[in-house]
Each structure stands twice: as structure tokens, then as C-alpha cells.
Amino acid sequence: MLTSSKAIVLNSLKYGEQQLIVDMLTEELGRVSFICRIPKTQKGKLKKQLFQPLSLLDVVFDYRQNVRLQHIRDIRLTQPFASIPFDAGKLSIALFLAEFLTYATRDEQQNAALFNYVVNSVSWLDGQAGSFANFHLVFMMRLSRFIGFFPNLEDYREGAVFDMRSGEFAYSAPLHGDYINADEAARIGLLMRMNYETMHLFHMTREERNRCVELMLAYYKLHVPNFPELRSLAVLQELFAK
Image (tube, rainbow, N blue to C red; front, top):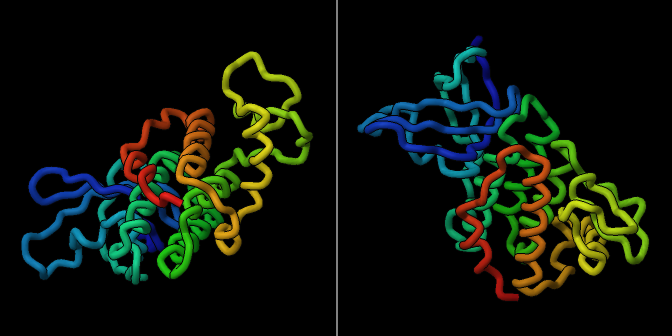
């Protein structure tokens, strides 16, 4: 079935001398993996530069349901980045989020709301001239709403812990160890009120920001099967001293 879709690149892996295996999140079908032959000359449409992490594309491909790797018929870059490749902070965040999305959306089917959220968020980051140090925190927290385990924040009272398995506050520590203590749990509601427009008002040290990332990754690992340690995390943790 010939399919046309908007897509965002998550990951690419060299396969042989002239091929790439590329994982994308598509608007029409959710996660799709492609095998792409990259010609040695510049004449072909498939160029390695198109498959940089979080690149926004229009793709046409012959979709075969029982085939693991699809073949691209036509491709076009829809929104060249203005700043992400040229700003070390934005690029580090983009590489982290591309790796994060590779695993967080691994089993996602067609989900227009999720796709639009990711594309609009990446576009916002590319166009942002001011503070964006908390961008990845907002992105990760709000993504959970689209993939089915957004925390229930309605029952918070002072002294509650946050049970990461159930995604709810509790008033005594659960028997398992997957919970956030009362001091840190008290900040969850505050963090969840952040959005891209207001996040610059929430001042954090690098250590506080990194702790938030650690807790969110722990939450995702509980809810997404086989979610691994992320290789790009170490670089992200060195960003934004203030």
C-alpha cells in the first residue's frame, strides 16, 4: 500500500557499506522502520543528512504490514532547522530526546495527537531564542499523557509519597521501593504546571534538574517494557550549570 506521511527521525544505524536502518515516528502509522540505500553520488534523493535525529520529513513509502523494514519511494525535508544543529545546548537536548523517544514510543501505533505534540515541541525548541534549560523536563512529563500513564495529581496532600508504579500519591510508603519520598513528591505538582512558555520562571540548579530527569526516566522504565539506560544522558547532565 503506497502511503504518504509526515515523519520525524528518531534513530539511524549504518547497515553495510551504503545502507541505513532508520526508525521514524510517522503521523499515519506510528512507528515505522525503513532501510535506505544511500547513493555514493549526490544525484539521489536519499541523502544521509536527511536522517539526522529529529529531522522533520515528508515520506512516501510502499507499506507492507508483515515486513519489518519498509522502503522509501520519495522523501522531502519539510522544515530545515534554524538553530538546533548550531547550538550546543539545543543539540544535546535533541540527541537525548531522540534516543528517549526511540524507546518511549517503540510500540506506538497511529496517534496523531502524540505525533503533533512531538513535532510542535521540536519546532518550538528550534525557534526559541531565550531560556530552554527546562525544555526536556516539560517534554518528558507531558509526553506521558499521550502514551497512557500521565500521573494522577488530584489527591495530593502534604506528607504524601508518590507511587511510581500506580502513578498516584499515597499516604504511606508502598511495600515496593518504586516511590518518591514526601519531600520530592511535594514538588511534582509544581513541575507539572510548567509549560514551554513559563518554564523559564522555574529556577533550578543543574543538580536539581538532573534529579528530575533521573526520576522521570525511572518512571518511564516502570511503564515502558525494556526501557534501557540512555547513552546520551551523561552529556545532558553536564549542561546548564544554572
